[in-house]
Image (cartoon, rainbow, N blue to C red; front, side, top):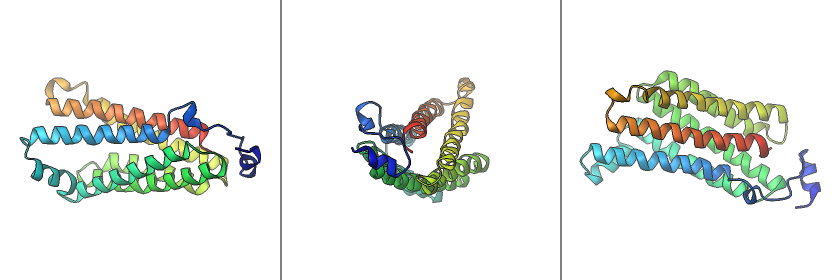
Length: 208
């Protein structure tokens, strides 16, 4: 990639695709998305005796919370794919793709917050979804225009992961009184948030 492409958007040149040297944020995001989806489905099937049709319908569209979570999951998978595509190119094209993925992630965070709110977790929903959506939408709008604002927005997203990690980690010490499915879901949540936070850090360092 010619260096003047990167100079035109006021950034240091990134001549080599980052996928050649680092994992793609999109791969990390979607690894967490896929892990959470698969474990959530497995735990749900076990808890409902394996009645596949009814279980799938309830999991994905059983109520308002399930519908919001399903919509958020779809949006997050799409945005993760766009982040991965961005990591395979450079210059202004990468910037445009990352901004698009940021926008979708911000919308997904709002849907996820709505899902958490509907299942009775208003504090977690308000704290995590507000930071996540504000950060992602902020970086989408600020990217290529204001580097300080974009850095701040990405820090907000990373900060939002702390609430999810706390929620998952806080359930682990009380494992003696919890069911096996609760323990599995809490441990899975911790791993997912670590994967997502790793992707956030890569974006902070290299995306803008």
